[in-house]
Length: 150
Image (cartoon, rainbow, N blue to C red; front, side, top):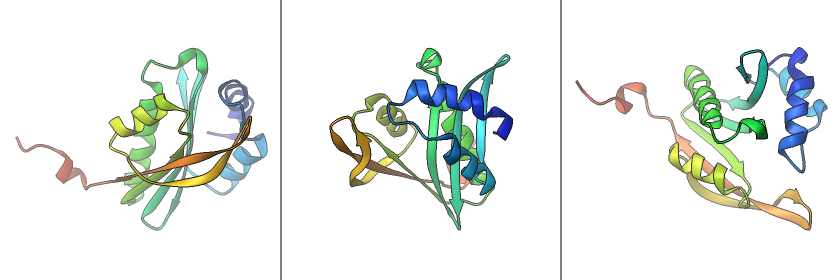
């Protein structure tokens, strides 16, 4: 992701979330050097992901696919791409938060090996007050341990 992508990123962010990030948050992530990737389908930007890395841990800050392109495996591709970046940076554990009201994302994260490790009360803004966050984590095993022997 580059500054030049932010207009398209914001177009998707505003369509996908009732409480979207601001363009300033994305700019701050880019300035801080966070790994941030976009997913394109032909000439169109259809999704993006942002990762924070510190020591041997990573935090998935945002994974989003344009609502018109959801349900086609793009979110999984983005998540796996962020995981590859994290592995390349020596990360051993990845964390993320997800709204309990987002069952599709929860199912994806479970399917990709994330487990619920806790809750953050009143973490997200909601139409009626605040919504908890489910905190999930995944241990990144060395590649040699994740491959079956021949």
